[in-house]
Amino acid sequence: MDLLFDPLFRLPFFAGLVAATVAAVIGLYLRLRAEWLAALGFAHVAGAGGVAGLLLGATPLLAALGASALAVAVKGALQRTGNDVYAWLILFGWATMMVGASFSHHAKMLGDTLLEGQLYFAGPPELWATLAVAGATALLLPLLSRRLLRQRLFPGHDAANGLRAWPVTVGFDLLAAATIAVSALVMGVMAAFALVFMPAWVAFGVAGGWRRAVAWTAGLAGGVYTGAYVAAMAADLPFAPVLVGLAALLAPLRLLRRFQAGAA
Amino acid sequence: MTTPPLLAFDQLRAGYAEPVVGPLSFQLRAGEVVGLAGPNGSGKSTVFNVLTGSARRFAGRIHRLDGAGIACQAQTPYQGGELPLRGDELFRIMGSDPKVLPQALSVLLPRRLDRLSGGQRQSLVVWSALGHPGAIVLLDEPTNNLDAQGRALLIEGLQHLAPHRAALVISHDDAFLDQVCHRAVHLTPDGAPQPEAA
Image 1 (cartoon, one colour):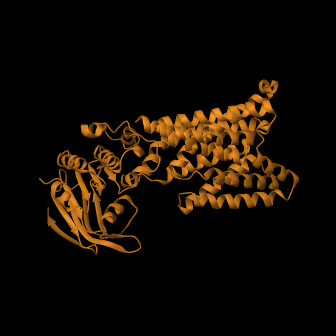
Image 2: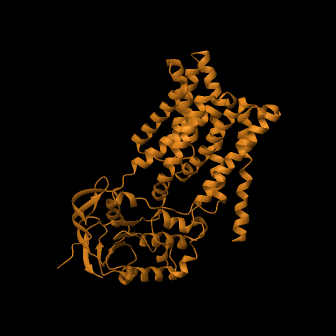
C-alpha cells in the first residue's frame, strides 16, 4: 500500500485519470453516433502505428497518433458512419500490429504493452499527450456537442442552412482517435475500450438528460479508474484486467432504470 | 408591391441516381403554408432532401431569399432508441424557444425523449422546428404517430404561424393539409405535379 502514495506513481495515476475521464465522455458521443466500436478500431490502428513507428525508428507515441489520424482520413473519405468501418480497422490494425511485432524484440514489447497496458511506466510524454487531448476535448467538444446531437435528431437541418457537416464529423473523429490512441498507449487496448463503452452504456440507460449523462460518464470513469488503481496496487495485480473487470461490474447500474421507470 | 418569395422552385427535377420528381414550380411566400401531397413513392420527401443536400438536383433552380433561415423536421430521424436527452434539451440543440409549446405539451419538456410515446416524441420534434427562428419551416410527415390532441394542436400552431414565416408541409394526409394549407401541390405516383388549390 505504501506504493500508492509514492511520488513516482503520481504521474502515471494522474495521466491515467485524465485519459480515463476524457475517453469516457468521448464514448458518450460515440454511442450517440452508434460508433462505440471506435475504441477498439482506433486503439488497434494506434497499436499498429506504434509498432510500425518503432520498426522505422520513429517515436511510437507520435506514430500511433499519426496512424489514428490516417484512419480518420480514410473513414472521412469513405463517408461512412456506424461500426462497420471500425470492425475493419480492428482486423487491419490487429494483423499489422501482430505481424510487425514479430520483426523485433522491442516491437513485440510495445505490442504486448498495448494489449496488456503498462500504466505504471507512463512518463512525461504520455502525461503531456494526455493533457493535450484533454485540453483539446475541453475546448472543442462543447462547440461540437450541439451539432453532433442535431445531426442525430434533425438530419439535414444544418445542411439546409449552409453549414457543412464534415468539419464536425472529422473534428470529432480526430478528437476520438487521439483520445483513444493515448488511452490505449497509457492503459492498454481493452482498458481503453472498457472506459469508452461501459460508463456511456450505463449513462444512456439511467441519466436524466444529456448534461447529466456527461457527468455520469466522467464520474463513473473516474471512480472505476481510481478503484482499479488502488485495488491493483493493494493486491499486487495487473492494472488493466482489474480496471476492465471493475468496468464490467458497472452493468447492474443499468437496472436503476427500472426503478426510475417505476417511480415515474 | 409584392414581397419576394422566401423559397421558390423553378422547373425543379430532383432524385438520386435518376430524377424521381418534377418538373416542379411553386413558391412559398411569407404568411403561407403550402402543402406537398401525394402517395408513397411520389417523391415528396425528395423535395425535402434536395433542400438538405441528400438528394440531387438534376434540372431547374431553387431560390431562397437571402438570410432566410430554414427549420427542418425530417421524417422519423429518431425512432426512440435509448437516448438520455430531455425535451428541453431537444429545444436547446435546435436553438428553439420552448415557449411556443402549447401548455398540454410543455409538461413533456423535463422528460427523456426515449421515455415518451411515439406521438409525444413526434410532437416535441415538430414543435422544436416550429420554435426555430428560421423564416422557412419544412415539415416532413409531421402528423406521424400524433393522436387527435397532438394533431389539433399542430393544426392550430400552423394556422397561427407568424406572418413573416412560411411553411412547406409534406404529407400524405390530405385532411390535415386541407386544414392547414393555403394551397397544395399534389404529386402523381410518378412524381409529376398536379397543382390545385387547397
